[in-house]
Image (cartoon, rainbow, N blue to C red; front, side, top):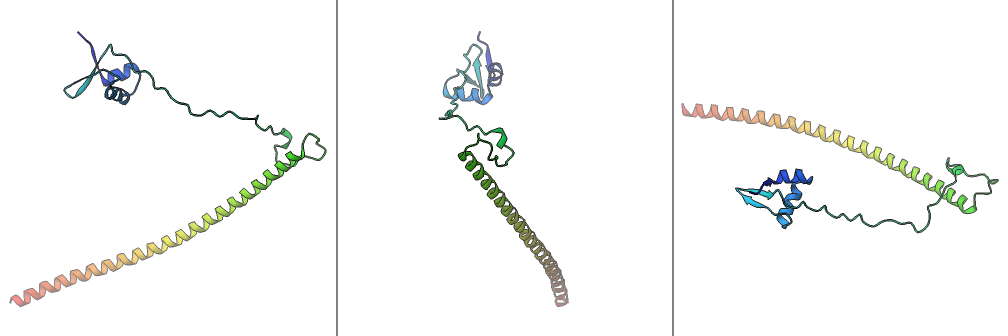
Amino acid sequence: MKEWMSIVEYARHHQVSDMTVRRGIKSGKIEAVLQEGKYYIPAAAQPLSPPVRNPGPVYTPSRPPLQVPRESLPFSLPSEENSGVTLQARELFSLCKDVVAKVSDREKLLENTLVSKEQAFAAQLACLREELKNRELQIGHLEQQIEDLKLLVQMLDKSQSF
């Protein structure tokens, strides 16, 4: 007699997810029998082979990465006496300083813009809240007038019935 396993048992035994087992049954990679709405898999069934994953393209640099001299790391221009620093390195360092300054200026501009927009939104929100409060008061007055009119209609109906 064959021994059978449920989808969950098979998945736990072979250390895969339940959905992987269901996909395997649907694709025909796993033999299974449907009885009373449940799938049963023979215990001797072969496990699913692990999926082959494509790691994607591998980056291989065409040249070695630029090595920055330790002396230039604190963002100070290397001295003229330092003969190990070439003109190209000085230009690159100067360009980097300019870029950092521009990014910093841009960051300050964006921060100021954000603050001014937040203030404008806060003012607009306060106006909308005040308008909502006024409309709620108007609604309350109108509801009171409706109640007064209903009462007046009832009184008129009673006086006409006499």
